Image (cartoon, rainbow, N blue to C red; front, top):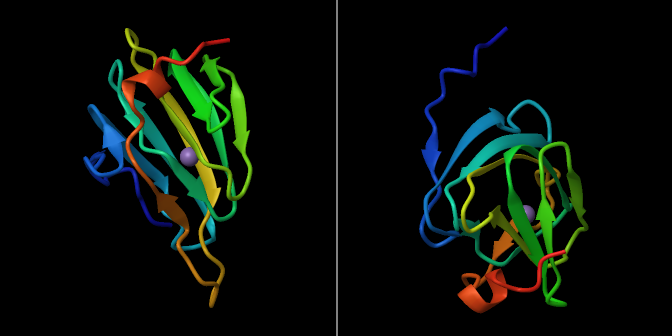
Length: 135
Ligand code: MN
């Protein structure tokens, strides 16, 4: 057995996020391909546009968040909600403008010998994209 809960929280790098984001690594993907992070977004904070080679499941545990896709749709996500982001689909996720939000991010790393990237990062989400019509 190996205790992993002593790993420090990590500040989300500015090239991948807008605003203040920290994440805690729950499953680092070193023993299996599956990875899990708990990601904590301050109000208004969000990821940049990105896509995952093997898709990603998001499960909201606290607060109120938003997630968006390139078709302009922005969806409100709340505790207990689970969102599937299919492989290769560009998307973003983050907190609502006035609320913190925490979600679990669950995804698979690359298979042995598979060409990357595991996650492909693009440009930051503009205020106009972030403020899209919520549903
Ligand atoms: Mn994602």
